Image 1 (tube, rainbow, N blue to C red):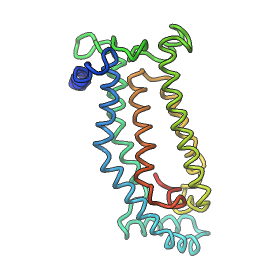
Image 2 (cartoon, rainbow, N blue to C red):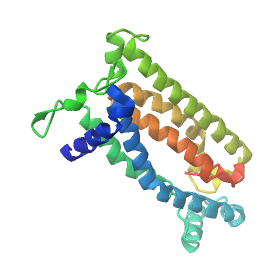
Image 3 (cartoon, one colour):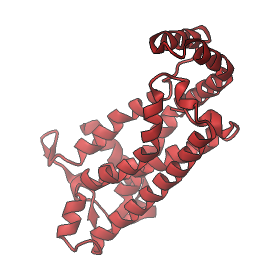
Image 4 (tube, helix red, strand yellow):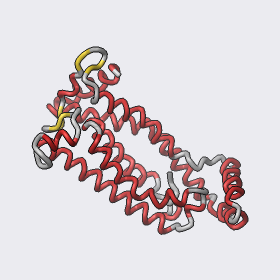
Length: 244
């Protein structure tokens, strides 16, 4: 973790002339962007996989008509079709999974008082009046919702709510455009009903993790929303309904 701390500190030193006391917070945003750039090729591969699955829609419809009453047989035939066409129905999960180690590193880095046996100096850094190692509850007890630190969290909540609303509206439209999309992958139907609400869960994450980790989450979530619009801009709405 000390190596990770050194990386954040070096980025902060580079950004110091531009962001002054908030250089470490800016370094976290830049670090998040670098992580997302690193996994972007996998996101592009996931988009290509989704487009390939969209091309299989006629064959999937035939399988549903043929095996509609036998869910087990339908699932097996669907997976066989994906294997034959070398398409993975769950390829979109990999970019998200690969980001988890970076998030947990950020979480632990700003949760520990000592790193490598030395005091963790990063905990003294702030974004405006909010300590990067603090949480929303700390902000509430030190100035309240509209205090200096509280306002920082209000801005983050506003960004997350805007991105979540955008994702919610977009996903609902896509699902409405393809009401049978959930049947393309057996068991996907219930997931599609919950999926539009998942983005709002990020609000809870931002509220309970250290501010540094919250910055990582907000930056990554915003990146994901923009990335999906760009990668899937040439696909019909209905074909996007089961995008991972």
